[in-house]
Length: 198
Image (cartoon, rainbow, N blue to C red; front, top):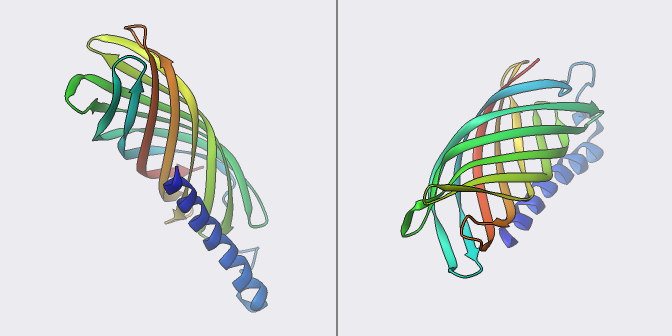
């Protein structure tokens, strides 16, 4: 979790630095009539690298082998001045194994999150958090984990409609396994996304 708070602190510092710079130099404040507008619906593709660990009530602690995930995202932003709030749904699909147990895998991660950020024209610095769901395959038997997510990232508008983003997300998950064990999962992803804003 310390890494999460360091990342969120860095994002906050960047946003505050932008505010301070604009306050010190009013001429640096962008013309709001020509600044990029973040409001609107967007949809796109996501690629991610996942890693983490699991704790099983009977079997003990297991690290997760790093793995690639792919999926999609749909969301909505609304902007007031430089402040942007929104909501987002992300679905990621892959096969992330527990170390030494190739038949124990995370197959899907789904995040529903709220976002709040600060825009500096075409750059948007934000934090996010919400609900997460995971599908786990235990040697052919599926079960579900539920919990929360928290993270943050940066979006950059390449054109009026195309946005490139990078994000770190941490998930705290819990559920009952197919073998009737309590499972606590800590799953992180570092992701890149390419979206189209309508």
